[in-house]
Length: 297
Image (cartoon, rainbow, N blue to C red):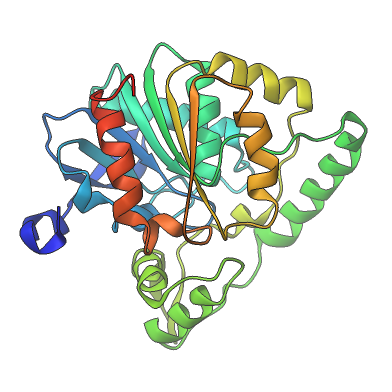
C-alpha cells in the first residue's frame, strides 16, 4: 500500500480519553470497527511516533496515545512518579474508556516495556504484542536498591522546579530534537516536536513534564523480569533496529529467544526505525500478525 493511494489515511482523528479526571490525548487511525490496537510510544516521545506507520495499518482501530507527562496529555501531581507501574493503570484505563475488553499493543522502546509488563499483569486482556526496539527492562542487582532510591529522590528534587528551556522557533526545537540522545531524521524530529511543544514567552518549550527526567525509585531484579516475561504468553513479534541502541540486540535477543512465543526480526535503521525508512516494512510484518492471518507460518 502506498501513501499516495490512501490520502485520507494521513489525517488521524484527535481524541481525548478521560481517566478519572486525567486527560490522555491521542490520535485514532484506521477503521473504528477494526481489531483494536493501542500504540505506546517511547520515553520523551509522543503519539506522533506512529505517524509514519499508521497509514499502513488502516484496517485496524489504532489509537496512539500520548502517555502521561508526554505530548498533550496530563501531567502527574508534582509529588508523583513517572514509573512503568503507574503507566500500567493508564493503559487499562485507556482501554476501558475505549470500551475494549481485549486488545493488542503496538509499542516502541519504553512503551514496549510498558506493553510487556501490562500484558503479563493482565494477560487475559492483551491478545498480541507488536514491539519495536524494546521488550523488558534491564534487570538491576538487589544490592543496587539503596543507591537507586537515593538517586531518584535527588533527581526528583532537582527537576521539580527546573526552569524550562525556550526555543526561538519550531526549527530550532526540531534541530535540538534531531541531535538529541537518539539521532533522528528531519521528518521524524519535526513530527515529534510539533506534538511535543507548547507556546511560551519567547517562543516554544517542551510540553513534556520535567519530572520524566528522573529515574525510577525502584527497579526489577532478574527474577522479577523473568516472572513478568513468563506470564506474557501471548504471541509477540519484536522488531529490532540493526543500528539501534548500542548493545540492545545483544541484550534482548538471548532473553527473547528463550520464549517460544516471541518471533524476532532485525530491520535497517536506528532506535526510531519505525519513524523512518523501515516504517512500511515493519508495518507489513505486523499487519497479518495483528489481524490473525498468519498464526502458523
